[in-house]
Amino acid sequence: MNKEKAKMIYSVIDDSKGFYINEVDKSCRSRMNVPFRCLYDDGLEHLFVREAERQNLVGLRSSKHISLIKPGIRASIYNGVPYLGVKRLRDFMVWFKKHFR
Image 1 (cartoon, rainbow, N blue to C red):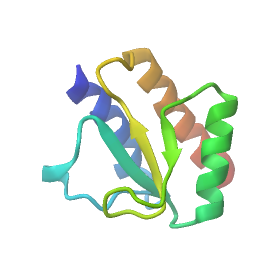
Image 2: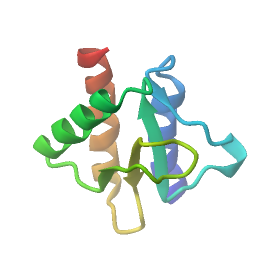
Image 3: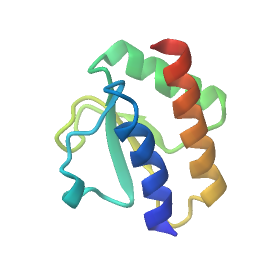
Image 4: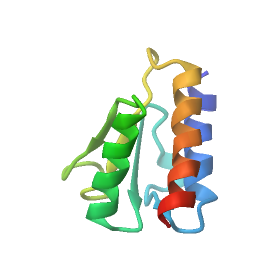
């Protein structure tokens, strides 16, 4: 299940044509924490987190100390995060890219 949840988020990132960026080699990607950037734009990332919170999507953090990508966003999709919650995040990411590109 965790593999499928992570795949949902990484697919949006990988298919975003550079809007979402994850610099972690595919062979080293985590199934529990998915770090990414929005066009390397801190302001856009803060907007992403704020808009996500308005949609009641929690577990996202804008952090200056995550992995190789700074400051960035981290989606934590641990075991307790339901599949439908990750699906909602995926759908939000697609919506956000469409409206804020």
